[in-house]
Amino acid sequence: MEAETPAVETVIARDAIENVCAGRLDRIAEFYDEEFVDYVNGMVFRGHDEGRESIAFYQSLFSPLRFEVDEQVTEGDRVASRWTLYGTNRGRRVVLHGMVISRIRGGTGKCGVWTSISPS
Image (cartoon, rainbow, N blue to C red; front, side):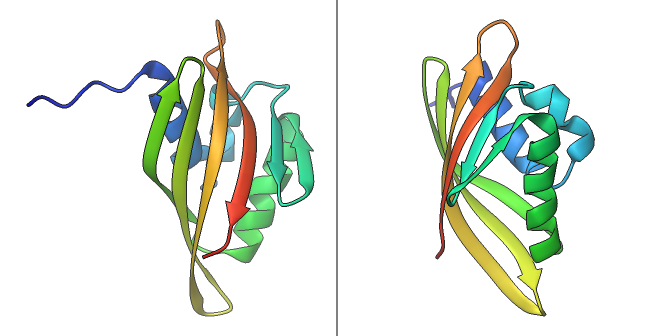
């Protein structure tokens, strides 16, 4: 049985998480709409500049920082992605699990993001 080709929205959401969220800040405009909103544990980050702040915060806590998408479900312009964050903090290995729901804006192919993190 042949594997299904993932929807364009699925690929965009995966690439955004595995590249930009892991620290490739030079690619933020490629994946995220200028008006995107990121909700993380009671904090709100809006637009590219604050998105960079959010990612820099994680980079300061976990080095090296890596995200891996574990599972995705796509419905229309929304993609639910379950992910795992890997990093090191104060010499200890850290693994966190979370989920992000990305809305891929029609015409732009970029994400507006709502995020929640649940520690493992």
